[in-house]
Image (cartoon, rainbow, N blue to C red; front, top):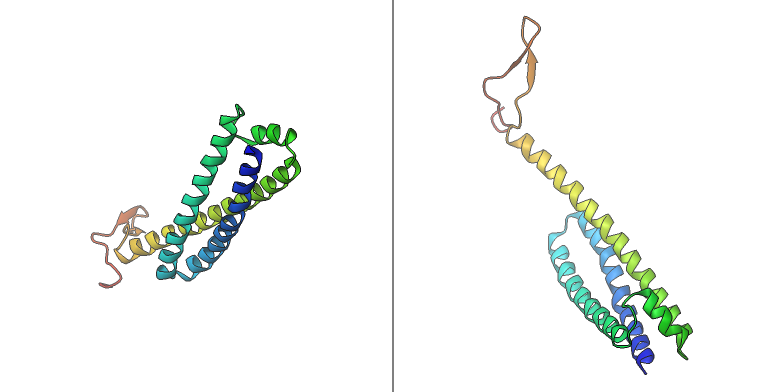
Length: 155
């Protein structure tokens, strides 16, 4: 009975995990286009899916723990080895795990994209605000700093 409940929870998580992957792919496109409205919408939808997946993950863990098994892949494997739906449990669990790994990879790429855009924006702001004054050589061949840097708007 517990094995069938666990299988049902895994199957129910496949659709939200797939939807999360699609949102992450859509987020990547929105990040490159810097579409903030779309990004806000995607974030809200992502959060609800993540909460749902976390809740189901906790339920799956509770089922395994209630059976005296570890709440991880080994526990699932032990349950599957004594279950009539063991092959289905293994297959669906593997499919869900692969989907979640793909989501994690897409999320990492999106995070890297955000960091790159933040660095670019910070550099642009530094330039616009005058940044560090350029170092120039004086007549003696040593370096000298300009007295006052000029921002682009003052140049």
